[in-house]
Amino acid sequence: MSGLHARGRVPAHSKPPGRKPTRTSTRTSTRTPNSAAPAANPSPNAPDPDLSSGTSSPTNTSNAIKAATAAKTAKTTKAPKADLATEITASLVVFLVALPLCIGVAVASGVPAELGIISGVIGGLVVGAARGSTLQVSGPAAGLAALVAETVLEYGVAMLGVIVLGSGILQIVLGLVRLGRIFQAISLAVVQGMLAGIGLPLMFSQLYPMSDSKAPGTPIENMAGLPGLLADTLANPQALTAAGLGVVTIVLSFVWKKVPGPVKKIPAALVAVGIGIGVASMPGVDVKTLQVGNLLGSVNVPGPEEFAGLADAGIITAILTFTVIASAESLFTAAAVDRMHSGPRTRYNPELIAQGAGNTVAGILGALPITAVVARSSANVQAGAKTRISRTLHGLWLLAFALLLPQVLALIPISVLAGVLVHSGWKLFAPEEFPKMWRQDRGEFAVMTITTLVIVATALLEGVLIGLAAGIVLAALRMSQTVIKQHLEEDTAKVVMAGNATFLRLPQLIEALENAAESGKPRIRLDLTGVTHLDHACRNQVEEFVAQQRGLGLRVELLMPGPAKPTRTPTPVADMAVGEQAQPTTGTPLPRRTATVPAQGPGPTAEWFYLDTRPMPEAYGPRPEDYVSR
Image (cartoon, rainbow, N blue to C red; front, top):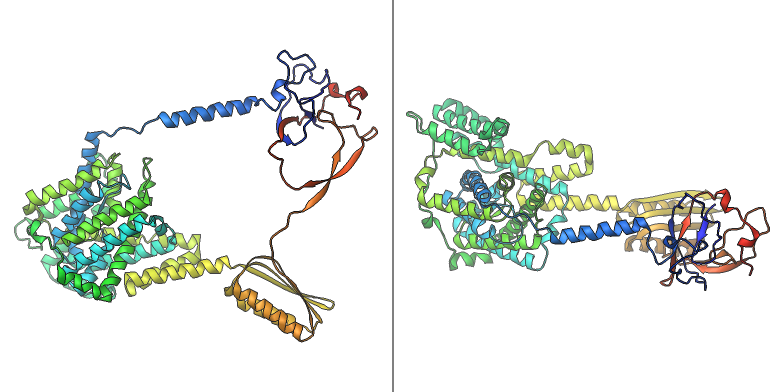
């Protein structure tokens, strides 16, 4: 039994000594003349001031103080200041990671190595200085190497600038109209399938330059030519040496982080490049090395002839493909990098504009497309960077190295760079994700596998589009969960439907309706009140069936889904004053009346009261004088 405490008449003996009642909040819209504020010096018969509606309970007061303190702390706490020395150190680490990747991606893309360095410089100085993401680092990415190689093979290096320029402008437009987050509305299975479809062909294509050979062409041809590549490599000592350097690079890339001591902070790719330069400089070793020219001389600004190529539908398709893939990869990388640190989160629309600005500059200079890169970004975070300074400076170091020490680049064996990209392709492929997806969701596993296989068999854009279509079909099938039950009762054939009825479930619906019509019963009852969504196709099918059966003389009862209507329920209300205690069940009950109360919450004039929900002690025993006569 619980006692109702309000600002009104309360028995003098209602507070047993040494026991403070537990208060529970409730509301009532009843007002009485006794609800005046308590006196300044309350008498022993006055109610506890903490129980009145105008005073908060100690718990609420404590919570309010804590909330106010937390809000004040949040406003006054400043972000940690950047340590310039740490930022410079982090920028050097990112530079050492980015240098071999920029060169390797350029070689894999079928363009001069200088264009990869130019894109890396733009990724640092242009994208790195822009707002959007704080720690994400951009540059030429291995994920676009195969797509760039196909484009260059079909349209030439001169058209690459126009395609990248158009892609950059589209990215800026998408960012300005605030569509940056639209790329997050893509199935994870499609994303992982896309990355696997990029990584698998990249690995097979780089096995050929890793042995100083030339890849046949398409991913299928590259896979089919592996037995011949192995035989040629074993028969040629120099090719075997180059392949050995590539294998050492791959092994180092996997195990270098497990090396004890501070030496593991040096990027594995840089260690492999050092070993490769040392081996290539030994007498009797004749492996192919990087051919480097003038950095400024490699700039190829598109002219009127290149812009005239925009009339080609293939060029427009390439621009759209570059835009979608580069934007998706950058924003997916941003989400991954945000999980690596606790600093400011990525603002997707400004970041998309920044990526578009970088690709616009890269297109004007005829360089490679730019995206955010996980390898450089994770190195930046792990090196302790806190601001955009580190990623901006890494572009400056790339520019200085290419201008002042180009002869060093000519010493790097191509097989080492190919080994770096084979490792990158393996990380993109991520074979461990396939069994993981199989265990979690076999439908999503099918979408992921379809996306990967179609990309390998055809091209990147076709694979992504088919993967998206497969993901949409899977989602539609799962959202269209419809339960249809049929049973016969005396002279009635009943069909009860619940769930989401869409056109995908038309075969089940038609079968159920036909069975009801063929039952031979004179009455058919269709109960659709449990349907949460009835699309046009299903509704039309039901209405046509009802009209047809009624035309045959059958009685058809149709219950369609509709919005619930508010009801007014009679509620027994005790005719007693506020502050009165409930009457014991053994005595004569108080007069009661039945009132119609709307099924809704209290109004804005309602007052707060507190109830003691504990069992009433003996001191609270009811006495006749405690009740108010009415």
